[in-house]
Image 1 (tube, rainbow, N blue to C red):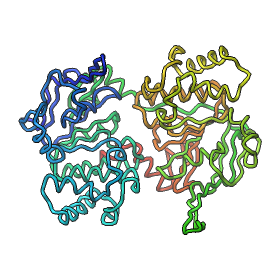
Image 2: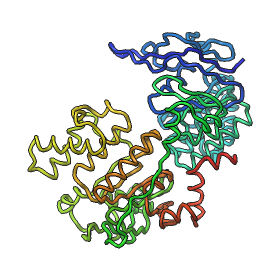
Image 3: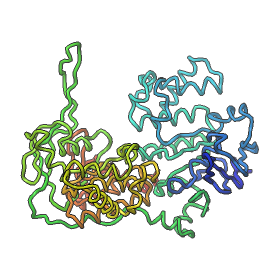
Image 4: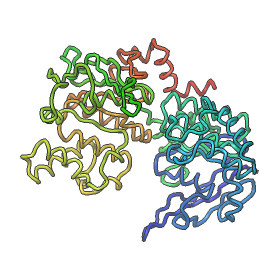
Length: 536
């Protein structure tokens, strides 16, 4: 008998007078000690399926019109609340995608990890504290005794995810559900977390349900794989066989969605459009009643750049390396020291009024389009805003025409311009963010992790779009990312940053083919996680 078995499982969401069929009659099973992957794009029904197992959907708005989920022979759908509480966090645990939103910001790490020990095992607080330290050591959290009284915001993303795993493993569950456990993490941290999960699985003998859209992870983590789209399982089977010989067109589409292609050619003899010389961004550390400066956080420490028309420079490194601060400094959005010139004009000493005409030619696309697009404005108003500021002479009809043209250029229908951001998918929202930047016909664009929150297939589409726009308009890109696979498909030159410093730079072919710095070597190994996990 399987550890977990779902048959003909369906989930409907009832929203006012509308019914959404999120999961439509799927079957799957998980045996003891095996890893099963559930893969597909956003909206395919993966996470809804996982939440159904623990009965954590927002009932009664969410309903199961039919189907069964049996765990160790026990039916979970419709089970009494007391029986579900005994299973949740004890025999079945879950690691969520974004630990910052799933950890309580008001409770210490000790309280959150020990809570499940006290609840399910009846431990005293002293014994639970000792066990909590053991668990934090098990998940390799640095200096666990000192971290007990820390709060989630005081930990890095990778450290928060380790705390989530420690909570999930507290009662040595039979099944661990990992819902996109590494999506928000840097590649080096991602590889560490995945290796940790494999090691812990071997130690505890637990089964894992891995939910992800990253097939590179699936290939070396999962024994069997189920592929979902539009609420249905369209293909299933042994992972290696599925990768070797995918049968369904959707599976083949997913497998072909890895970022690919090469940097757009540019004139290497052209003068630099954007130039910096020993650029520094130091944030003061102030202490005491008088707020005296006792030191500095050196976010960017002496970076020199020459970016030419039509060229893409990729800036890579982990969170906190200074990548985004560098991009903001180039746009004069944070204070900095050192020369910055744009098209031969020195920018550092220009006041805001003098900078305003140049801002039309210098744009930025942010990481998360949902938070960077105002929910209160329509798509038309979002894109029109910059046109009104920089081209005040344009009338309403002309602005409508310019907005429509910008939408067409990014692959969207002009008819959508009167809709609002929440009515679009993540990929469509990112296209809107790109259209907002491109509507002003810039020459230089900072792209700050523009694909990290997107599914693989959407990532590939956005990369193709950016490459096409660059080729058409000779745009200069500063492409900021921690995903070297994406950078490899766009950039001709790479700058590797760590702790505000450039540790290595050079042509993309050299950096990827023969990296010299140990940190660069580590980043590249982690980026192509298949090889790393294969040796784990």
